[in-house]
Image (cartoon, rainbow, N blue to C red; front, side, top):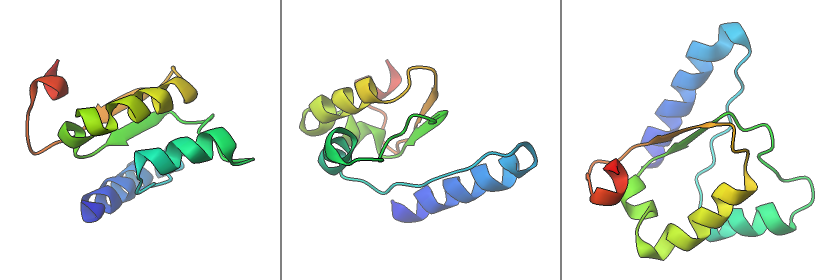
Amino acid sequence: MLELAVQIAEQFEALGSEIGVKCAMVSWDSGRVLDHLKNTRGFSFNRLKYLVLDEADRLLNEDFEESLNEILQLIPRDRRTFLFSDTMTKKVYT
């Protein structure tokens, strides 16, 4: 999973370099990211334009759904979200 995230980040940087796109890859545990967004001073995704989630089928299951929904409330609404998954479940394509 981490290898794909690195590849995606590299492609965003390469393709967007001419227009000043900056990319930060976060290999994350949703609970930790949520904790940082709520409690770590200076940690934010306020300038986030693109959110790329790999393993979307796992992230959208009940174990992660609640924290993911909270994270989505704390990041900019004006963004593009891309979901990647090897497994297509109803939650991924609806």
